[in-house]
Image 1 (cartoon, rainbow, N blue to C red):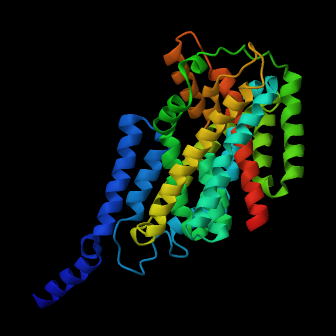
Image 2: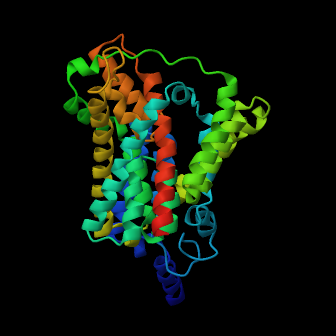
Length: 380
């Protein structure tokens, strides 16, 4: 009988119930909230559902030394997590993004690229704020990239500059990407008048296939020569787009934007979520990162909208730009462009801004990768 009791007690020590703390419960609840938002609200479900379930996986209490945790060398989760920690997954995501993206709106209206550049102010504004909050320069750079509204870029840069903060930075970036409509809409309404929101812009011109093929080649050469440190992201982005537009590599493009990006999205979401173990995530630094991330989104949106308003002062009637597309300078493609369309149609149901907003939106993707390259070059 005594041996049975000892065996049961030994078994109990290895259960999650025996090793559970209130921090584990908090994190599991956060994971459930992520899953709920993804399924019920349909806020970025392809991201929030894997991340939410990953958070639950990473916070199942376990007995130390079982070699199954994500931070235990040689475990399955640890091996899968190397794609995040070593920065393998983000370039593959960018390959898929490039194969999905149509740069026609930007090619036909190159001046709107300036809006995408203006919105990157959020990155450098958050960088300065992070320094003021006591973060080291490399950590501040990794936190600042959250303002680019680009999860893969945030993971890539934080894996190089601040791997210890990567879990909080990644979850923060993806959380706020899912909340783009909630965050941006009130800022856009506050900064614009009804008259400005009703500005109609001409339809973008038709772009030839030749232009679409030339753009990724020339775009990559120019950006890579300016910021060589951004090569992994920029190279894969433009390469994916060339596969799409060349017309002769359709199978490769379909693979890049379909099965490949789906598999990598699953792995990156699940492992990023699992990396948020309670003892590493529930810290004061994580709270600061979420606060700074929100500020960076606000700064980026505000900068984009105000930049268009100032620019309009120098443009003739008939050539003015609707400042509602200023929010789309962040690289949350195509969610921020959809917000421009939605708010514009609230003011005038016949005013369609989606195609015009896609120009600064895809420019923001390039801009965030360039900004990451700049930060990596200076701080890496």
